[in-house]
Length: 105
Image 1 (spheres, rainbow, N blue to C red):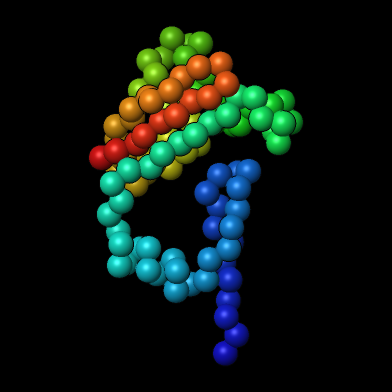
Image 2 (tube, helix red, strand yellow):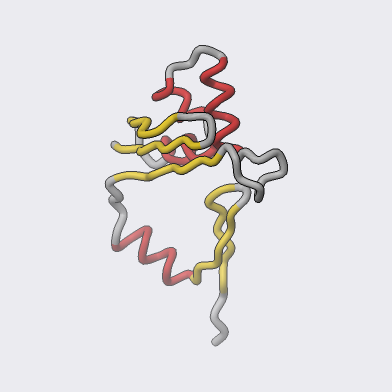
């Protein structure tokens, strides 16, 4: 029997491979995570314009006068976290080059 790999998308820019047993392990044996951390760069040459999609979405929401805790859920990661029941966002760092967020339940 051949081992089948599945591509799982965490962020539009990042992909990794897991086999089905890994997915089953995370879904069934360890369903409760305490939180999700987001680290979004605003000055990283790996991105076309130097900013990650999450960084741009967060900063754009701030420009639209959305408070930082709510702006965090305007990002791709924030939307995925919310779908998993993480309804609180704690902004650790918010400056011109870096945003650090912790999503919790």
